[in-house]
Image 1 (tube, helix red, strand yellow):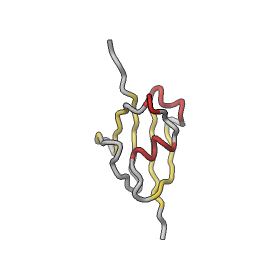
Image 2: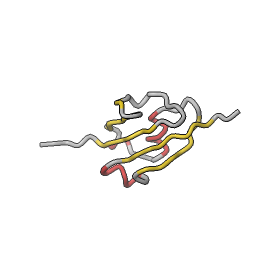
Image 3: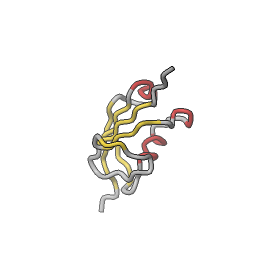
Image 4: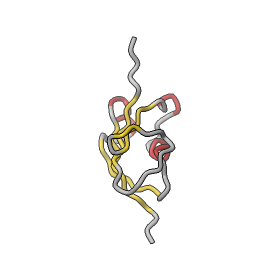
Length: 79
């Protein structure tokens, strides 16, 4: 039995320094958005992020499913 899921990850703006703009990765079943943040080694100071799973805003403890599309954006500060 396969215990992996395959998801598409899209990194935007400054987050592209941690990985490709678009990549397909395998994760263990039951993985959450935090698993992606850790896999791409996005540091703590970058962790104020906007995360969309299948175009819906989700928290970082959202459990991912096979073929989900995850888009991660940095929060852009204004001033």
